[in-house]
Image 1 (tube, rainbow, N blue to C red):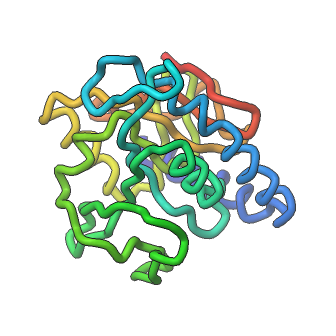
Image 2: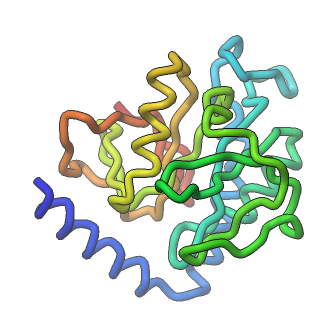
Length: 207
């Protein structure tokens, strides 16, 4: 299983690096254009959910700043804030777990380890993610069952486990390029399914 996951990760990372910069930029802008669909995907009445224009919308969104050839999130972060949503971003801890801080705009991001950009605001603690109505997850692929292939670092496996322990049920969405929505990815018993794949063409319900 580990060999199968490793081979698929290697192929997908290579395909991402081969994408022209112009295509990556177009994808980032297209993802930002679906901010409203993301907000409306959260059922009204769920914890951490408010209402916007009469539809269910996440009062708090846990997101991340894309790096390298990942599908670009920066326009999306600003689009979510423009809709009045509170956006939390991760802060990588020494043990590879994630703390969280509020995103207040591009000027409030600072370089951190491993080429990451992190918010400079006050730390809210690892449990802050449990109060989000929508959690955006990085990934390399997801399949039609909702099973996600991450990069293998384990940080977001901890996030998902923390949500489960807290009884939190936010909408889970993975941001991908179009060709990374697959029929099947290799999965292990501890892998937790997600609800949505967000690609440049739109939000795809999974499971």
